[in-house]
Image (cartoon, rainbow, N blue to C red; front, side, top):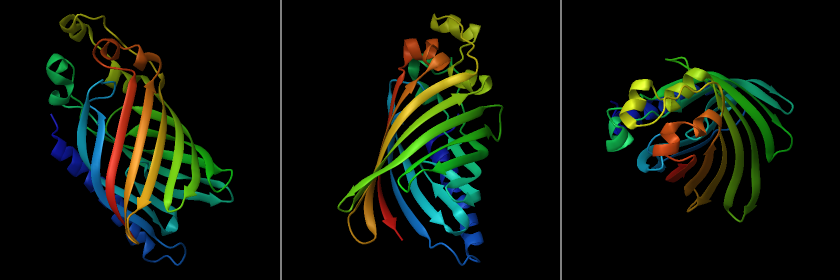
Length: 263
């Protein structure tokens, strides 16, 4: 079982390490200026992937654009561009995937369904920017410790600012390979017998489609409030899992509120 505190510490360590590495490289750069936002907030998220219950998770908030085309974001992970020509961007992609604990599974599922530790993902991404506010892209990643693989395709659009209020939209579709799908949504015969459901061994395919709204409102020259609202709908074998159908929900809502300092 992994506690919320240790999960937060690992998330903070990952983001901090990525940021420090990027800063170290950037010290020798003579190109882009740094644009960095740091803060802390609370994320209200499903208790586990597919759950109808929610939990509040304290999270660090980082959104940093560094020289040498390095970005670190609590919401979008780490990217290091190796392709930065014209409208194309592409390179390394890394992110952090939440797990689930005995407590988060709740009294009905805890002790029957497996607890899952958090995992780091690594892979690559490719993005095309049609205009300054509109871009489309995708990333393909693999668990650094495990057999899970993930494909994300997305479209981002920066909405016109309203005074000092900046906001954006993102539409994203995600697919998983069989190992990742089974890790989150599979139900073994032994587990099914204890839960009174049918066994479920999902295969690779569509896992969810999501819609996200991000906003930033400055409260002073350097401080502000960041908000993210993400609605996801589980698809395919994830939606059809007895774990979701009988004990959770295909509708997943995650909200993040953070107070930040902008350099």
